[in-house]
Amino acid sequence: MRIAVNGKPAATLSPAVEKRLAERRSPEVAEGAVLSAEQSTAAWARRTRLLYGVLCGVGGTIATAALIMAAWWEPRDLTLVLPVYLVLAGGLAWLLRFTYRRNLAKLRGRADAQLPRMAPAGTNIRADADGLTVGQLRNPWSDLVIDAVEITDTSFDDSSVSWVEHLDLMGDGRLIVLDTVLIGNGAEVLAKVWRELKARR
Image (tube, rainbow, N blue to C red; front, side, top):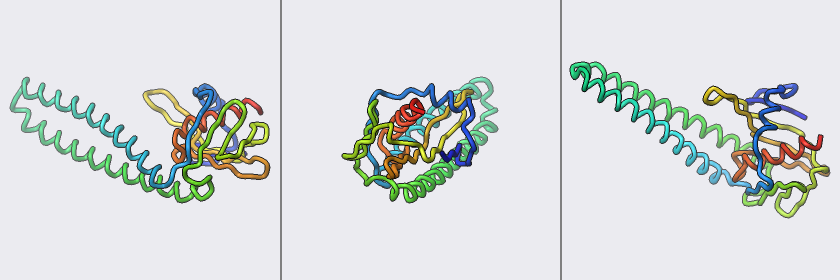
């Protein structure tokens, strides 16, 4: 099994990552459908804009409260605080725009590379206790092995988080490619597939 963590090849998964993946909840039945390049890009853009909106809203509220307090405490300080506030706000807006465009370009490259290896857009995918169904083809878990896996391992709010980003499966001589961002509900589908296959090792 080929392993990559955060885009870098790894000989094995660390016990900590294995534990986090094992603790990650997965539903009894996980269903999704392969997305087109346009659909995956649109879905990612919606999620990212929502996240940016929340972050900007919280940050803007805190900064505005600080400005109001400065104006109330010492109005003359506004001549110094307001320009700094505007510079920081402009810098943050530029950083968010730059990050958004860079990640969007990465997503498009990922779609171009992986979608030709996957089932056609619109193909339904279902993972349950009995196996993995891709379109009309049913694959019992006993027939599947993991050929390659990509894991994202990161930190958020002072805690580490790991999830399965991509899977290449082999079943009866056939390659099955699953990708989190290129499948609707992909995170749950891949979590379910990983859990079922690891449980049968």
